[in-house]
Image (cartoon, rainbow, N blue to C red; front, side, top):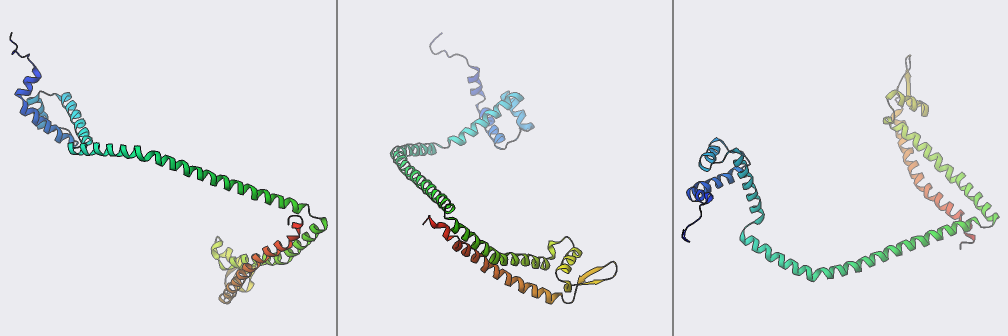
Length: 257
């Protein structure tokens, strides 16, 4: 046996004798997998007759081709890989240069942020302590001052406070008269309206049926006008009572300064 003697290989023989079929089969596999379909009868016959693949082999080859297409999509072209490698090298250099600077800046900013949080918490705590101390000092003011303040506060509540309460009650009553939608049905609304304003409702028949009277349009106009006046009055009275109560309680700061 000479050195030129070559060991027999079935794979090599198949590759040499059926290279055209193998290439054609590869292209056919690529088309089938790309279309995401199963081989048709003619394709299955080709694989079986020309390449000797049974159904299991065909499935195996389709899976192989699916992996080929997936990895080729990831790998891209040679030029694309060269560009990606260059980009990775550049990014690594930028990271090595800039990352420490950014970390130092982040630490600096974090220190400032922590300082702001501490300042805010200390300021809040100091303000709360001062408010609590003022309340305690008010409770320690002389008895005759505390009694005088209580009397003045009660007088304000009996005057301005009563006006506000009466105005809010009347405002609610008028709102009910002007808004039937607050009631489950028309008769319930008319019964309420009759109690609030007898002239607004007429009665007919037995059992009694109620309906709006001819005077209702004029009464409604008066209600709307009164409602507007009440809203303006409340807009003035609410800040007025707050101011009056604040002034009345000033003597409680006898020790607070």
